[in-house]
Image (cartoon, rainbow over all chains, first blue to last red; front, side, top):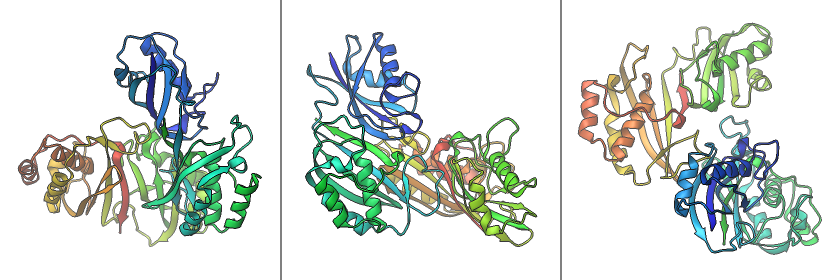
Length: 242
Length: 242
């Protein structure tokens, strides 16, 4: 049968999602724990190939199992086998053919910025630092340019396997929570590094290093802009839709 | 001259504040970095002996130095020598006789609880989990019992070196931030584990395991109550007053 398992992870100590022979990865640790629990060789399909340092709050994976543990019990049971920087939240049986990545209809990422001129020990792995003087209104106004369907080739790092570079940004917003600025983006899909490059572009906009005309030109032309991807530690996969 | 240095630290990977021969401690790492920077043997006085796992946002230390680095430059310079889970925030020269602990006139601690029935990977070292059903009104009402000067012997773990068990709680409040409940307590001083036992008592109050009459009895009698100290990872030293 096909199982959808939701997990949360702290990406700090992982070399990203994808299994690698000599590095600690979320997929590697999860497959080991599930194989141990279900006493068969489990291979999981992830919903997103998150980079090293990126976190996830509700990350769905799908896999096939012949095990005799009731589907909704798998999440609780596998936690005993998982390291504590991965937690299984829920599990459910899905119709044959369900695939965590290919069945997906969209995703939400958030990007967390801490407004502060000094470095932070506590948040060093969980947010990116931005200067206190950053202009949130400029960021909010620039964010509106991304809304809708565009060819996002200009906001992609090389190495993307996705052939379709047209994506629809369904929602994009900035909010404040104490000293944090949180960017939330919901799209039909994300190209490689797209969420981090959008965050980097909005940080540049907020610092007055890039104006709206330049951002509009990048969106219109598909030519990669000057903004770097914002650091991976600020990025959180929030939710995947089906 | 006498320097007051403010540091922030993530207590997760430390065996607490206090120097120990065979364990990684904040004091040990800080003294090594300062000695290296100032090219003399530096011993620091901390403001609080925080336990393993406890965090600090503005933790003052005092120390003597004959070094030739301008006092206000020390913070920036020592960051290059410190591990990234300790960050120096500022440094200033103080009058002779200033001592981070004995000169202190009071402290603020916060205690961070995440309202959620599932375990969390991301917040496992930064908050304690409480059940979603916890009653914040009951906690807030019980918290008022602590306000003012009391003998807090009943909220102390054995091993306290403080002879004066009468402390004044100047402010105590609970607030919500998303799914977090944050307890903030300002007092003239804190006995060993006092902040964590108060947090544990308020969690018991919020879960209906302890009523206000019982809490009032513990405060009145000085006999240690049933509530355990809440886990160290939820505790943050916020500020020390002089």
